[in-house]
Length: 340
Image (tube, rainbow, N blue to C red; front, side):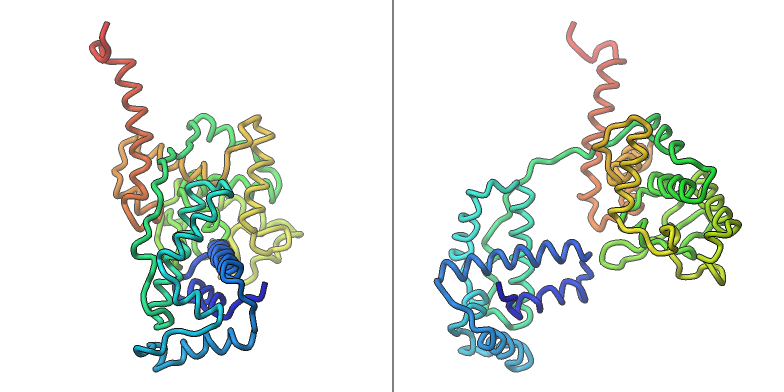
């Protein structure tokens, strides 16, 4: 299908102003295109690329992007979508029911349309936001999966520490568990983001927000050993000329930046070597980091800052997990916890 200019305008906004990740932008773009394709079919409309481009430009250009009364309306698909009503959008959402989407997927599709129409209204492209009366379906809370400290220790010693790439993987896994940072944040780390004296990392999170997170001594030692091995290895010593400023901290064998998918593949490799559950993911290490902190007395606000969550409610899901474990411990230890 022809990609309407309004779709590209919205994606550009997500990238340049909201600083969404490439993956999230693609998902939102796919959701919006699905809606527009449904609109085209439901309205039995044909697309004239030139007319669609002119319709978008006319709305975007009218009085600097703010459409005066009476200027909204038109016969293109772009016009029909931007002038869409709540009832019309509900018909689209109802049409998705036969696809057996999960509640999370449906919530994302609604979030896409909510963001799209909010953007369109603010830009003067739409006369109103039809999503204000549409609610997101409730989702059952899923408890984060965490693994035990013993399992963490078994995983962390699996990568071989006698050669450069094995040491890189050990240092990378140590860092992920030590800091709880996202896999996207791990691959974005640069050599000069590490303060080994202060045992801290500068991390660039969602929305390009930076934060400083502490790093444990085990992770710092692993990183320093990895860097020393790189610099002393004739095959890899060229990777960090001039101190390595701006260079990726965890690079591939060619000196480039690892991808999130590469990290997942390497974790899969070591899980298999350690005889552990193959369903464990990089995000499991993040969940385990948070859970273990809370179990050992860390307060929720501190964990929120360490994880880089904007909202405390995002972090509070971990309290359900730790509360259940406390309840289990109470039931097992207190003499009057249960009726005899």
